[in-house]
Length: 58
Image (tube, rainbow, N blue to C red):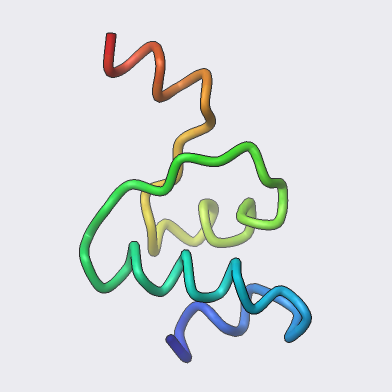
């Protein structure tokens, strides 16, 4: 969790837990939340927008 913590303010604890869970389980995080852009750029967690997910999964 400490790895992803640095990408979010402490007030965004839900985002920290979502990102840490995806990192630990090697899952794709699907969100349009702009708070995850730094994490996406760092390529620690694979993050798709909702539109990307629809295109890729259908």
